Length: 311
Image (cartoon, rainbow, N blue to C red):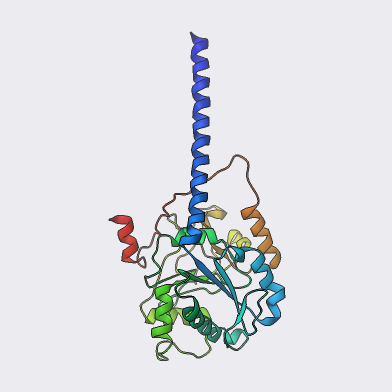
């Protein structure tokens, strides 16, 4: 009798293990299916400002790595270059001219691509972006709401860091071009920091900054290199609106659905691309909920999204 019971226990244990493996495999297939669907449903135009001298030095490497996962990738330059989809939007060149280049770029997207994409992502040529995680976060929101996303810096009204990347929806783009740009009193054309000035212009036309942390208060957009933020999670904490979560572990800073890191070298772009999309860890699958949890701070979350989650 005892032998039979032991054999039965082994059989039940084996069936349970098989069931868990099957459940994990099914969850992975669901995530893959959803990711493919989101590529079509959450369309992202990515744009990266570059100078002509960097077309073949940095832009080509963005295009070869994370940029290929955008629905459309454009490099905003002062010289057209079809080989990398670089567009001259009629702006001056140089860091001090970046604000005017940004203004010209956003007007260009509004005139040419407004109805073709739901979201418009700006990143630098030394930013790395995980597009699948960006779409996963954005699926909770409606592009027709006046919102924008990124790494939230403190200031009067706040703004999202340019280096970490920021995302505008259609309504935000429309308000910027139709309401902010024509009004010099609320959206100056003078040469200020591009990310700060954009934040001031958007605030003036009623655009809200949404908390991009995950439900565990871990960040998704980062102005720093991944190495720097892991080694010193509290760096620049006095500048950011949402300080990095502290629980004593180095990786508590960063969400497992992280979206961007900044200050990456060309080698870093390829390294992250390899580690994220090629490396497989045997026996380790970490499923995600198909319905992305809302952030801890709901202040900037539009009513349309809140109603979808709570009604």
